[in-house]
Length: 588
Image 1 (cartoon, rainbow, N blue to C red):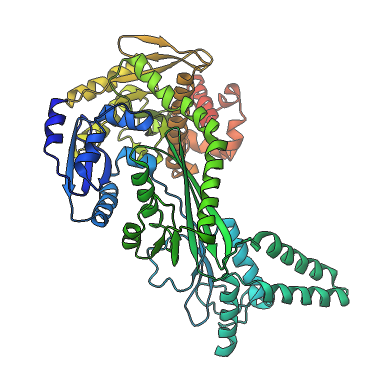
Image 2: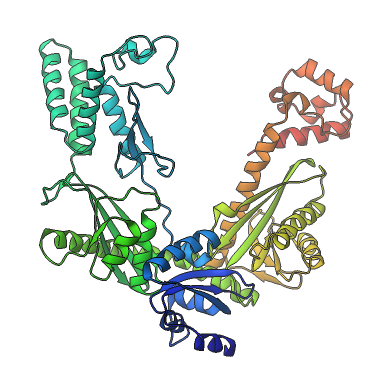
């Protein structure tokens, strides 16, 4: 702590970014500050609760970078988070992306649902965001039925089905007047901008015409389209009539959590909203500004963004390169207040669920730390092996952070030697994993869990110690009902109450790594051919294989046989091995 105090005394009052490090020198949090000295010092003064207290407990060092302005600090913070992917920033990150509808800027346009906006050279014909991909596809399907635009990615050699059902004009074969195509394009754009009146009128006219001609099925089809527009696409009208695209941000903070609501206003209508609840680590202002800055990494920026009073509009305007306003009165202020009220409702409704989730994850993780007497327990790496009679030998590793799975960090291992030897398999996968951790300076886990008993634990510990690492290893022992009932170390065995949150967490980890590994095992196994299915069984050579295939034709038929029936071709021991092998083959 004296070391930290010395560094704090040297801090500047300039704006900049700070990088918090743990005992392994890994950057665990990146933040920005108007005044570095005040902001960084605040972490080491007074008492903290929730995620901030947990962060502070892990800090053993920090770095800082000074910049010339707050905008530069916001840009730098964003870049540093992308570079280092710190674990406490991950807690706050929102990876939500919304679908848009693209009307392609081609001679004959197409309608597509897109998510990735970074690759678009022109965003002129992108419309949205839509609340979900189902809603976006529903709109595209509606427009494709109403307008005979091009449906194919590349022109076929002859007209396709869409041409014959009158949903395409056959652009691959016929020259369609440019004026007709442009008229369709303009009407589609009107619709995507929120004007549904002309299409509604057209559908009503067609429905009436079909009814007069007693084409009731067609009339019903038009009625369903009309219902879709009225129910799905008619959104809440707002008072502002200027037609400007706006996003409205609101927030509510309580009990260490920040609730954020965003309303998407397009064409004077609320077309959707976004909701997020995050744990608080930094100051309210810092968290909110960071969230808004990151929010548009996967979304198009509207012409205007309305934010609460606490957000610095000049800073956000410069960073986002669009108009950001803090309304003081009128309808714009009412919209911000409505967003804040919705943020409050969302947090109050979900807080009980959040508390239950924390009890099953963070609290259980903390209880596990106490049981094992570890100084810290954030990152856990869990291993499992899978094979079939020593063949298709694979291992899987899953990662849990603060009691929750970090799926983007899962890893698969194809074992070099096919043999029924779990201990050597464990030695190989542990060596490969932690040699790579050392070589590439990856983050080290606080705990390794192997799905097995003392033999697996000793095999893993032997390799970890040979690499000069000091990572505790535990195993999970199952009872005669194949249910986990003990947590093992090389020296102790801990009985786990099956009604406890710790048991729930361990069982979830065990299920997760098992399912992940078995899925990979099936992928590898499926690459083999049916013809070589019998190869792994010792005692079945080419002659016996031909006899079996000639008599029983398929593996499914062989699986129905008893050991006694298999003995008509095979010796008793080989028949027993084949029977057991076939029962396990393609088994879930």
